[in-house]
Image (cartoon, rainbow over all chains, first blue to last red; front, side):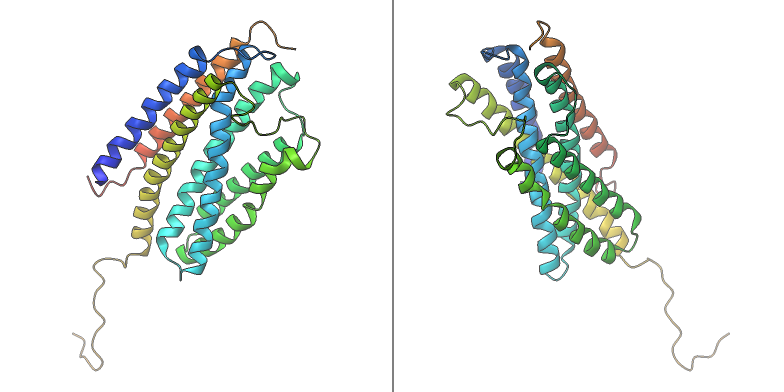
Length: 233
Length: 37
């Protein structure tokens, strides 16, 4: 079963990504006002959704670690999901910047959605740096779980920022606001990036767990302590 | 205003996405647990 997931999941994810690329670049029609530049949406939106989902998973794993008597698997899972979330958020901001230039006329603006997303990235980069610098596994897991929970407060703020404040960024699209071919292309790309994220987190989880096992394992070949009263040679 | 050269933005965006996925996949492969192979 594990072998089937190891092979099947990435094959499916990369296959769907290729199909999604074709649908987004070739098959979907141009948008009425933005023309072809809107095609960035087919990578930007899935990456945005999965970055928030990855940080939500980090939050859940961190809470679970603190509540379940320090199960190390949760700590490894939180680390894996946070790293994948950081990669996706960094990519997201670059994609948004590329899309902003032809549509807004600037590469970057301190808009609420952009600013809260940048704060989210900085917060979780800090989380990963903290994990790097604390060597004791117990302290590292507890401290980073607290940092993850505090940082994840920004996740709903990012999501609702376009509704709460007067943002230049558009509000979330829905199947009712897009043409059916656009919806299909978007759904294929969302599924592809979702499967890719799951595979990334799963692979990174096993790396984190292997490192934890090395750190927690007692040192091999420790000489037994001499019995009380034993005569030394 | 959308410039006529919209593809100058679309293709780099897709290229960056695929490159990021490829580089991160490679970094995971480099860090794979060695003991179980």
